[in-house]
Image (cartoon, rainbow, N blue to C red; front, top):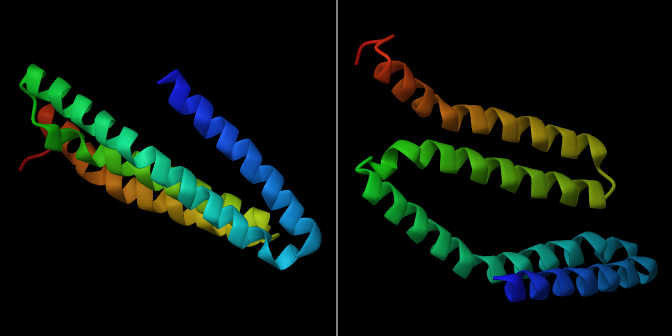
Length: 130
């Protein structure tokens, strides 16, 4: 695992240097380069996410709990990360107001994803009916 994260950090550092070089020569391409870097790093992450999902699934199976109970939490985490990355890309492009709006929309989407979890929790303690 340490080797993998080391490669990721090295690739990110080299990519940032490349992005800065591109921005100094063609400022309009800076956001496109950042987007490409994010896509490349995400592709490196995908196999690890599969390992994580399988590990969490095994963990829930060993407890006897339905993994679907935790799906809203996973959705919230995904929405938060995606909206954060999108906001940072907007900031890279110099659009701070758009970045703030993306963050607001991401927070609202995360809350919407969390509603089923809140409902399940309230049903579990008997506060609301089916």
